[in-house]
Image (cartoon, rainbow, N blue to C red; front, side):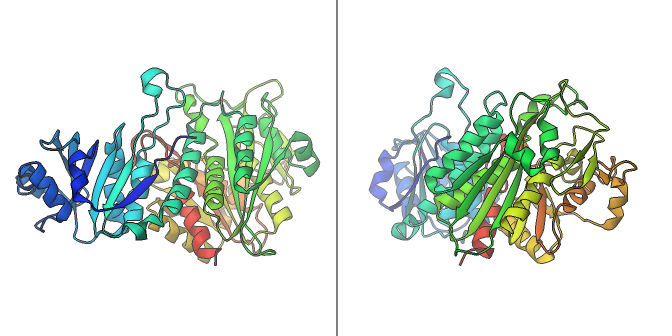
Length: 491
């Protein structure tokens, strides 16, 4: 897994600033006095910091923006990064500062003069997350992992030191998700994905891998139909974290894990198909959440289930017009083999409820292009049959600044899924494409089971940098779901 930088909270010792390497970060309040650390930097640079703070450039900055004093005289650092902040840091503002620090880290180290500011755990977490880079397939110097460090100098170093384990637990879960989503499909086969999930047993997670013969006995013909054209065997991985009271019903997290999606017989256009290595993003998020929960020893019962398949065109592949029977017993007419994710999820959702009788279910999938058209790359689509459960998730996502927007469900959309040959079909056409996909999945949710469906097609993997990640896999959802567990299922 990509290395996670371990942040250090240390007492503010101004005598160390002259020799600090990499970047020294000053948090400057507009019009406010310089704190003790900033005053030492100013003396070392012979007044350069003060002149910068009085400059027009700094005056035009907004809180959360920064400027750089390169190669400052009197210091070993290669730069002093000056970040404009409000007098009191909110969690959101602290994450903005952390993002600047993480992006500036590069191959260097960073020392942040944090003084008496609050929410330094959020600043450190953001810096660690933003410093991520996926180098597994780079060679030579470009693939070398540089030795980096992150030190926060604070007046409450002992207080913040207790937050390090929690920071690392979240970051390691996010990094696992990003690594999985970034991997190419020739590396991350269904077998390799299952092996990486099995590695969580080292942290106390109970992991089972259900192979094709077991899935056939269970009646998971919807899931098996998707993968029948691939040489990679279809699998379902079950990950149980039993950190709560014995007998308490678990929260079930269910993830779509299509390790590569050609579209099958309904083959996709060639342009952009290389991006379909990320079609296991839902399974990647579930696996990352399970790591975070185990890493921090969450006092909750949570089970993660991921359906792993590869959707390929082949003489054995599923055809449009086929009719398959799901584990639930419903028959489904296949309209387009490129709408495969819902066929994977429907069987795993039913299995999760039959076996674990969960207190609630959240499924995640890079499910529909329609959701990207509706919400772009800023928000995941959220669908739910339970207002209270949904509001709890939306609150958690908002707190973690992971974009999520609720979209409707309704019986009227069921008409679009009517079939003359089977109980229903799995595609309702172009109108309301993300809604009809969610409406299809809702048929596999038992009465009175709180359920949330997250369509993460637009947020799992992106083409430009985000606030806390470089372009590529984002790890969206790990932080929000971890917070949901902490606030609703622990204690």
